[in-house]
Image 1 (cartoon, rainbow, N blue to C red):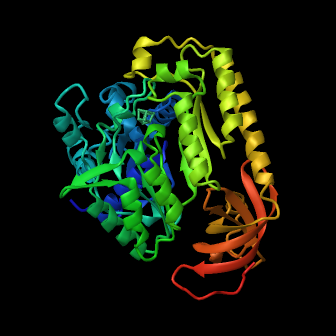
Image 2: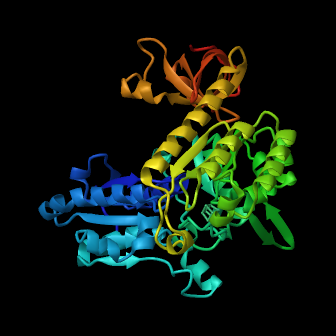
Image 3: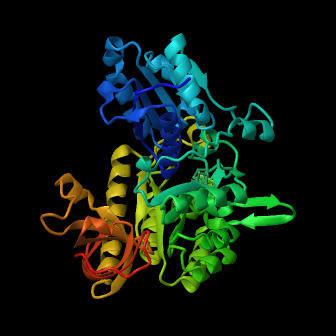
Length: 482
Ligand code: SF4
């Protein structure tokens, strides 16, 4: 059914995978005549794309749903849907907690959303569309129930018109004891190289310069076809030949699958970003074992040494969980030592929260008090920030190449998005994923520019344009518009 002038409000929480899912869903709904609105009050359809990795993200969505209860009474034709990881995990529970919700759609059924919204509006009945639980079928049956790929794309939902995410894998089979992803996203499945390369070519034709390949464990990618085994290194080599693409990134890496072949590919393919996100999660072997991460600190150290030997200029970032079950002061200090030893570019630090459906929730007591978790979180952040600041200050005086993304968030908040009153604050990223802020004309968005670094904080490098080298759609050197 085609709907005209329907207004869609969508809120997305969580990871890049969710941002991509929202882009695909919005593209499919736009094809049906929907328009996006930022005002939930005027929306006929309200969608929440949800995350279950932390309890806090779920609370946020249940609170937002609670606020819609009265608006739904005033507008009974409104369709409210919950999609993504929380939908797959909580299913009917969502109706119990928020009876005004019409649709619950898991990560494997997103392609069905346009049809389900239409049915909800006409039939006024509640629907749950989710995949099989991992224990409710053979691996093949469960995998099939998670396949929902729609190649339609929607530039407005991307980080910028020239940056796009491309999924190369679904799901995860690692079963870390704290993590819901193997349940909410299903078994690990790699997409065919032909589909991925086609999608990248279409995006490049649309003006995309930077593609970030997504997978829960992106470097575990494996696809066997006609007797040939494709790995991430092979995909990167094939993508490197696509005209128009200037930067290739990939997240998130699993430490045990960081092969020399992949590191050599990143080293020898100039379009590959010198950036590797390789979560360590803890600096203590006992904790890693309880988390079932599949490596020891000695093995992580060996992997990190290979990265440094092959890619000495790469930015390496990590994730850490503080306050995991049984984490002692000594174990926490080992994590701090690990950050000091490896000098991560940055770390995403999270307080442990037990997630129903995981092994840790069922078997391991959540025995670190909340105030201790909070204090460890602050301490770890302080150690990481100090290292990030020191390493960024070391860039002062150097010239770096950035892909210009557009006006910085601060410039946007101040309403400075055109250059009629002079240069505005722009932001871009280096190949090693450092954020650089500098004055310039917003028309530079989508170009590569060389920036002389003049200052640095824990999160940002600050500088001035030296030259602008390339603008999308033109190969000519253009004058500096600073
Ligand atoms: S590797 Fe572990 S933490 Fe990462 S998605 Fe898979 S189960 Fe979760």
